[in-house]
Amino acid sequence: MESEFKDFRLDDKVAIVTGGNRGIGRACALALARAGAKLAIVGRDVAKLEETTKEISKLGHQVLSIRADITNLSDIEEMVKKVLSAFGQIDILVNNAGIAIQEMVLDVTEKSWDATMNVNLKGLFFCTQKVASHMIAQKQGKIINISSTLGQVGLPEHAVYCASKAGVELLTKVLALEWGEYGINVNTVSPSFTRTEMAKHVLENKEKLESILNRTPLHRLGEPVDMAAAVVYLASPASDYVTGHVLLVDGGWTTQ
Image (cartoon, rainbow, N blue to C red):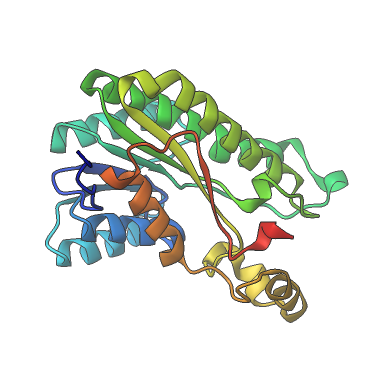
């Protein structure tokens, strides 16, 4: 007998979104809430956190705002405690927090290397580790890492960022191998250039923007909602047989 179709609803699920106060993270938080999830939004900008929290509250969903620095392990541990205290469970983790510093290789300093790796890789790793210990106990969970097409292709002035995102994508595969037996799916969404504050340097440079559009078969930049749609799919029951996967949401950028 054919199994019933698994839908995209997330009712009664609890999701954490790091960097959930702006850009792709904000779009993911709103989309997960619309799918029925209870949300914990994590970030460092209190004002932006409050804005997004109010927006989700208007949708009639429970939402918790947590000011935390994911490069600080004690902040991560406190974040997990707050979510469990408020909701009693964690079903979905979206590791979205990230930074990008534009520098040619010879200009990279130890400070900028550490800043990028601490957020993009170290912070993501330890958020995942602390949350997964609870997912293992409950025998289920969905972890979605936000990487970039620059985890697969190089781009001048982005050496450290590319290295950090390549690390995220291979880490995803290892976590999927280790935690599959506990019913935990670990996947990655890899956007190309997306219309966010982080891509401001592209949006304001006509030559760079045209170059990107010419290389993209769909001939447009990504929108945060494009990434959020992929995240909802990977968070939902519809993706229960998908793990260790890198889902490129890039308008065809990497086909060339």
